[in-house]
Image 1 (tube, rainbow, N blue to C red):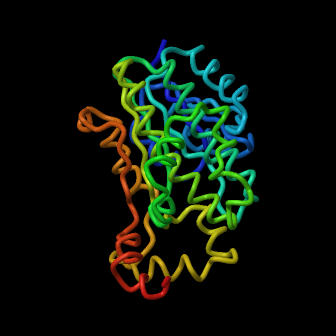
Image 2: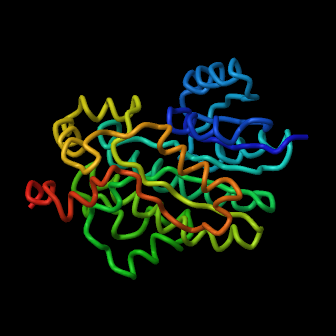
Length: 277
């Protein structure tokens, strides 16, 4: 029996993280598109890893439970990496809420029930959750602690209160951040840790969709006028994930790490502020 990594979302960021921490472990990767999972498993298996692809739709609790069950066939769940999600240009409001918000909440809950002592996890959120207006302590607590099956019934998440797909995405990512904080308490009861990472513009196929979408100029301008002056790479996200998922990050849990080249800082206090007021 091996320690097992559960990994959802067969993309570049998830692969970069898994390559840092996945050697010697059984890796089960789930993706809604099984072709994506098969392709990324092939790349990693040919590099010496032990990866099994599986179809998994994180908007479905049943699908998540099937992924966990498959992982448990090989050993204890020692690590969890969630890099699944859809962007504002890829899906309508309802789909964004079901995948990025509800699906992440279910993953944190269900993996938290089985993670082994000393286990660790990261979920990939987004800088978008940092750019929206503050929601207040009441709504933040609702997003953090409402039972998962009741989350989408919250007033703040009703269609009439959501302006567009970007707003839905921002709400989902704010929920991710608060949910990780609350779930870290439960994970801690098992001697395990969970954190989130909020990347800015990272060059991936998903980001390229955004560059070519209706907000493409907005995103290109964002990384051009951030302090770093460029977009990031998946490996730079993996640098932080490696810290969080190893003993060097043993005192870090329930936290969110912003990795955006300073774009959020520029949005509030730099050249991007003027353009967005």
